[in-house]
Length: 207
Image (cartoon, rainbow, N blue to C red):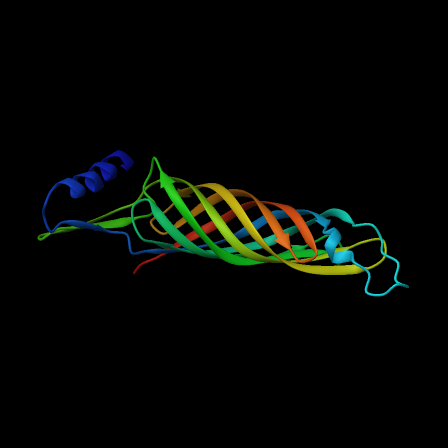
């Protein structure tokens, strides 16, 4: 079915006819995963404010959380989509936690991005890929709460991450996906490496 759908999409780019494919669908994914941030404090954020203040060495460590991960994906073509993404902690490392909200873009390869509708003058035909494979980039703002030997601190940082994932359709609308990402975070107080692994259920919304 994926091969036949690929032929349909390719033919529409060659033939000059009013026939076209509509990928105006949205997809909601929600599931659980593991997010881990390995951080180190920036030395410049620890400059003393007075001559009497003692500066402790920069702290480093990691914060891991079981997270509820949510993404709402908009498909614009047979190979591209963009999403509003985010996660909140469900189980964390005590009072330490990590939250995220941002935008992502995915490029699909060896498969169609989503189900679609082939439309010509006389008929319509809906099709959907059983498997979809993608790579992408995410830009996000993350909120980190972490503990050092002297205090509990927090930081907001910009995170740029690359992700790879696979989605499988179980029914016409329901499916599942697995996604993993790794990114680099730069904040006022910290620099970090951020990893995430998610297993989620997906659901299509018709346009």
